[in-house]
Image (tube, rainbow, N blue to C red; front, top):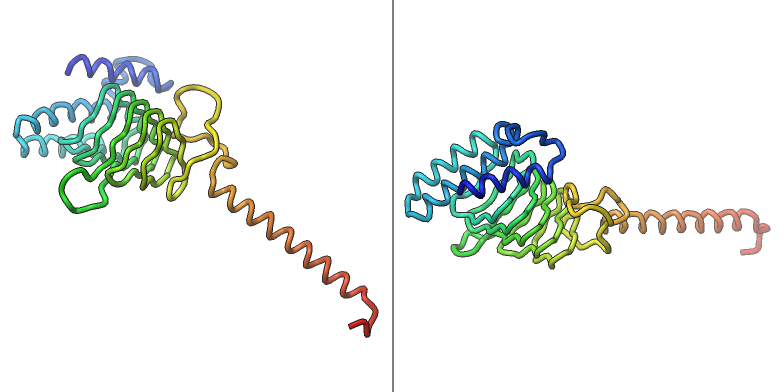
Length: 224
């Protein structure tokens, strides 16, 4: 557990340019605190101490603003940036080297028992406000854009954006870490592209209508 604590601190240093020292991370990063407390709560849960595990989880939520069910399975080097409003459900599973921003929800869509929450693969980026709902799988290296709502599986390496989330045509060139899960390029958003196409078509129809009206005004009387 101590080794994972150190790994988590180093992962924050690698992925957050605002982190100036290990001491600052230990003292001032709620994501680090929430994950550390979850490790203890998860151990209690596995030992059958369910109520103490839930109580520790609740205390962690009050201190950090991050809610992680003690039964959730979290891999190594998870980074929760900012963290406020994050919710990770009971049957959620998170792989290694995942980067998660604030207000992400790994939620369920069913009241039935069993697997109800998502499985997040290794090296996934979940943008701020993303909602991943149901027992779906987000594949290794995938990126979920800010405020996207994901209701179906995401293939490995795919970038998805929008409501409901849809794949974009390409991934941007650049660093391995993509802040907030998606490029700040509206041209990549399929919803924005659809609106732009409708706007272009509307402008063309208006131009054609104006040309027809002008031609009609120019026509001599009685030609009808």
